[in-house]
Image 1 (spheres, rainbow over the protein chains, first blue to last red):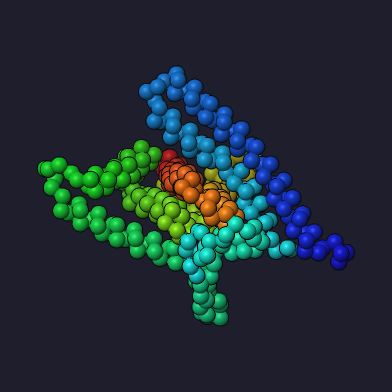
Image 2 (tube, chains in turn green, red; image 1 turned 135 degrees about the horizontal axis):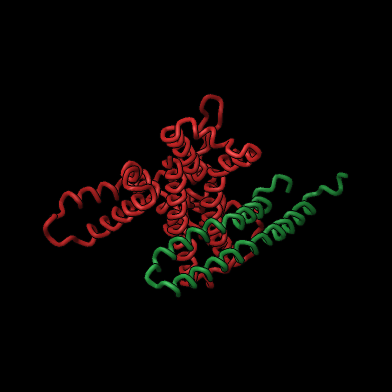
Length: 85
Length: 252
């Protein structure tokens, strides 16, 4: 088993894992796009409420971004502070 | 020591692709000194230095703002600085009043304004060559823990024992309610931390991997997005979530 856990192999697998982790960026992208589309529709229907719609939309998008940021943190941890590599 | 304070590094790498360890040192938290206290080793890192600089800068700005307010003529035309101060205070007042209600908003506007200014200045400090203190998980987790204690202090103050019994409201959902309470500070702190760290890492990779002659003018646009825009949005989101979570406990 010693041969499997050498440093280069673990580093390569960590880089692959970081790349795979960032697939989670799909979800927030779709969610933020839906929120922006609904916001545009709301502004089109009621242009007077532009400020309120913008504030609510940006708050919702920032919260939807959290899951993507979790994957980003996992990827950064794998690359820069990996305890096994 | 200089390489941490400036994102470009001491020498400014001339184009060669470096090993990830070097880059990790450039964009990570670096230690300047260590102090032995009570048998523990405390590190003085770039976060502490940046926090010290930021606190001094914000204090100086606050003292200047105080002097400008005292010297301004209440019946005359306000100057540029007076207008900026009025915009900041008016924004803080209107957001706290509209989110927490007229009754409770006044008590929290000092804290909310301080939080907003502190997070905003720490997020944009990447523009001035510091490593942003909010890209250190200790800082953001501390800020989120203040919110956590404010939520539960106000919960016990305004809802008394209903704050505890509310956790068992539908009895089968008790574990989910408890996890929801615990995950609030973790998700708030990770959101701020991840956003600022993302900007720091991308700017660090850009400055360290590209050759020097390509880095003319256009990184400024990325600084505007990652530091100014993202930093302002995240400061707004953090304070807004703090206000929303605290004002949920006011309901009878």
